[in-house]
Image (cartoon, rainbow, N blue to C red; front, side, top):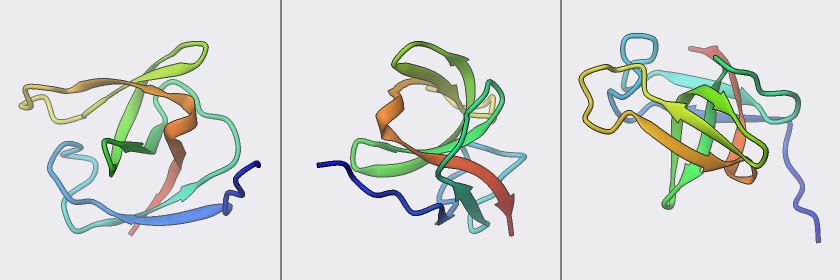
Length: 92
C-alpha cells in the first residue's frame, strides 16, 4: 500500500545545528513533492525525530546531509531517500 504525502508540512527548529541560517524556535514549511538537489535544505526522519539538514551529496538510494553549524562534533549523516519528508522552501 502506497503512503499518501501531503504537499506541504510545517516544522519548528529545535536545535542549533543549522545556525546561522535557521535558529531554534523558527518555523519552516517544506514542499513534499518534487526534486531535491545538492544544496537543498531538507526535513527527514532520523531515529524517531524530524531533523533539518543541507544536502551535501546525492547517491542512488541515499543522500549525504550535513549541519551548517561548524562547531558540532557530528555534522554529517547518510540517510535513505525514503526518509525524506520534503525540501524546505520558507522560513517564518
